[in-house]
Length: 414
Image (cartoon, rainbow, N blue to C red):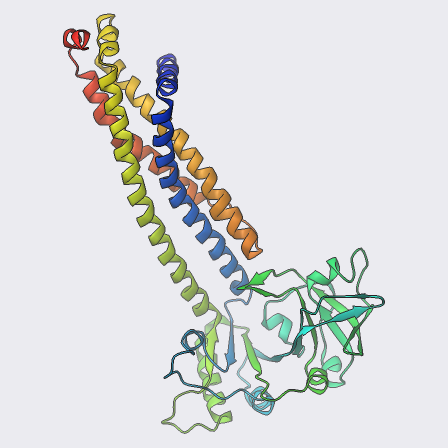
């Protein structure tokens, strides 16, 4: 059986070389179809990995209170969109003091400044650093991990200690080949002692999270004053069973802080980490469906093209079929010969499409988004399955037609 397959493969390759241009066009059509399927699925895999990686790090037991929720932010440019007031520091502090739900811890934070230049001795960064003011609970509540040093403690925050925590990119910039712990950096003339370095997070929707400096929140408020500063509240629940009740209690507490009467709608947003992840995953599911639709359409077209070339091949090689049958070749042998030829063309086009799809849809997207590249096994499996379906659909009829030719009539064919 193996010898027969090997012989049929040699014959198939010879036939392909004899009709090289036509075969190249067919391979290109199949490759485009597989490329569309694999490329989109690989791109979706990278996108989903980035989304789940960034948001899942928040943990499934956290939620945040901000000026708008996720759905409102998507529609804020509409003329009828509701404009919520900012969450001021007194409101955020009042919420933290009054919200005492069991097993929860609350953190406050705000973006103090953007596009800041940071200096260390004679070295300095580009003016692209974000300064974040935060308390001692900000890191655990945000799913941030330290690779070196320690987190803020209550003494650092309450006493306005000039200490800071750096993003991971500083180890490749200001502190290349140098341990940044206990070193001093300068921000607008203020000197901060480095006490910690964050684990790499990458970018989220263009926001480079590793280019930031976190300083105690009270110190940030005194050094970086600006009108209408919007604060964010993050809450972590120690027991998952109390999650829904904790969110409900937070809404009640925030409504009291905002002095809302019972008939008024909430003028703030609650973002649950688990719901946000599911929302984003539903969007990637839509992209996957689109990938399958595009892939099916292109593969259907390539199947028709492949079937046509095989039917033409059967017609052109009618005398060859007659000779092979007259020498003892069975119907099964003839059918297998043409089916193998179809399989070889499908595999060449399929592997070409898989390679291009992974390079463009996977590696290319991961480089653009500055994130890791997960091998798209689903896309590869889908492509291999598609190749098999194309081969069966396109090769069966030409193979059966070739096997059914009468040897006498085939030998008379001109």
